[in-house]
Length: 296
Image (cartoon, rainbow, N blue to C red):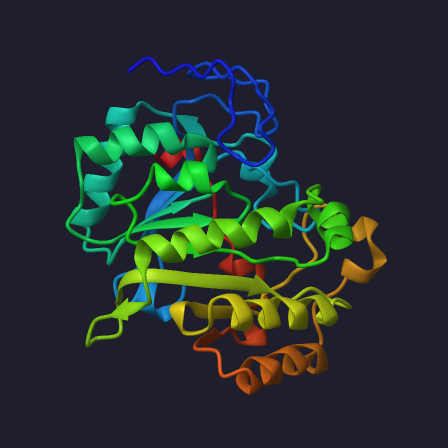
């Protein structure tokens, strides 16, 4: 299937790049055909997604942000991955479902929305479809996914523009992410879980606590309470590791402390937000997937 975008506006950068099937000059540096680095059962998502048989994660190469602490730099910025056809992506979905995973989990999918839509038209799995994103999205792109995505899994990384500019190269992150999450919640409604605890439909907002940035985390939780409250689940993550270019930023050159973690965790409880809190023990490199495109 020949896929060409003459003027790309899929993400908030609206860089207007031409994107051919296997190459592109835009911020994400990707073509339009899916470039994937892994497709496998993944057991380190939230309990309502991983369950006992794992989430069927398809990791895409490329990203619309440039987080200096990114744990997946080889695929987000260095292009590690294998370009496949839309038909092959559809077959990956089918294969993962046959393995017994609880859902199909598209990780960092934004540059490939067109291909994902076509793949789901070729084969729609009987299990939920998860859209796992940085949160840096446009409502216009998300509306194209209505009826195809069952569970949205966005980050809400920052409220302050100075931090989002400094750490992720996107001063407008919050003003883009909040309306995007509003669109996700509009599509999914309030979280719906089965009797066994697995999620069928809904939105889970993730937030990663950064060292020396607990004030930002408290502001994020406050906004979630004010804007979304019981219409979302919150996943508070303590897994931060100084990866990527984090060593260039002294404040990011260490893991978060127990005190930092508990300060934000207690705020989560005080606000009576539903969801999950990741243990500090999860801050290990063993939990970062091993990307080996040759195994695809």
